[in-house]
Length: 268
Image 1 (cartoon, rainbow, N blue to C red):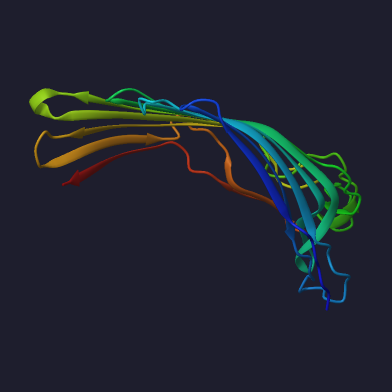
Image 2: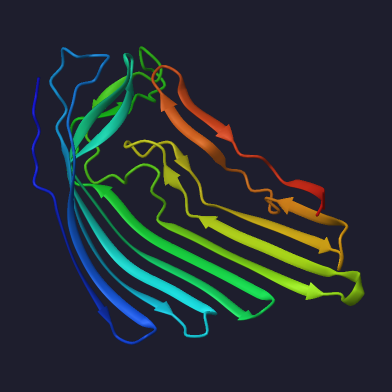
């Protein structure tokens, strides 16, 4: 048996600069217990994880209700970050000595008029291990005795998995009145991802990709069927829904769907 204890805390300060603008500062400590890997209970316990979080931001809400915006910066400082790794015995948890994440987030929602909605989101992220000398990597050497065997490695200063440096999305809806013919609603959404690594060794990588979805929906002025035409992944971007490295198997990836075009009919 093992016991883990940690004093956790949170402190925050909010300031209303006006009826429309509020600023805030926040700091907190989080804690996650350690434990044993069920596949190898004879091994030592993995250590608890501690996170110190610091954040500052501004929130804006216009009096008209048509404009809202959020902006914040944050810094996460991990001690003994718990990391999952695939081994010949199955998935196991280990500890990286330290890791740091800091970034900026921006969000905007706007309604310039009664018939138009716009949403914008942006995130910049820097996420890397501090010290992680006891990581598990995959041996991609062509002459390896066992292909894709797990080997010990030092990934200190490597980027954290599944942490893209930049994410961006822009969406808009526009309703067009057609008189007695009803209304037409046009929608579009752009998403961009700068790419990420799948494992701490920073070998298997999802490259940068962008997708565009669009649709046009006609609705009658009275009761009756509505018709919607849509296209998903208009740019036919090639990216993966899942990307993972398995010992002795190599890189397993599940490609995302290509461009799709369709129509839908609804009745209300």
